[in-house]
Length: 331
Image (cartoon, rainbow, N blue to C red; front, side, top):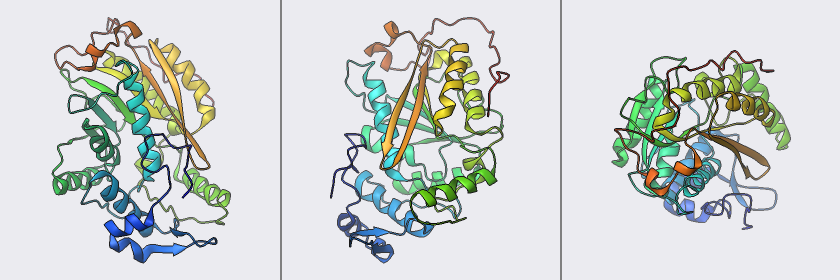
């Protein structure tokens, strides 16, 4: 199999899907395999059941997850892309740690919108041993995530966000401190836009038209008023309140054209540093933004031990949190 060099160098999926190994670990996957036009083994990625079975096998084979399942119609994320986000976050932390990736339970990660799949905590714990807190607004998603934790005997903290308008408020407690936050925000402004995006995806892949969302997704997972740019703007605004309790805030950004207004929003927030990290999986290019209120001189190896008492003692002081949501943004 050809190496997919665009995936992160540490990704276990750089050589594509090893179906022989996957089927050996999960024999039930074989019923979903087909031969493509050049005779290679694959699955029908328009078949939601096949995608779910592939994910189950990938998580078992590469990340020691012996039980994994999600309820019907919940988002079933493509594993290689999610893995890349975790690896690039590890690189981000390493730059503050003498280029050594920090590992172990002392590294605390907050996953906003962890979903029914719990995919980021599963990968992050397996690859780096990080300590995850998963947050979601959907009770059904958290019920599924809890079952995955219990069946695999994993120590992952799960919290329900009670208020739709909140992201960090209500889940970050006064004595909490996190090394990094991550988020896969709802990308679309409406369900109609989500369906149109799905149709464009299949057309670009030469699969014709399909109204079926093969990766599933509840409304909260797929869209919100204002789309991802409004969601991330709200995230930046609320991050200012927790500047002393997190080293890096991050979020995926699906649309490249959203980077310019987000740059303006982050400048308005007076962050100490921010950057855009690009990733690529096959024909798809993705990215995430990362911002911090901690000055570079204070992001030392000692800072990698988050203190529940004091966080990172950011230089930001005072209680004045200017609103960023009234910024003029073209959506």
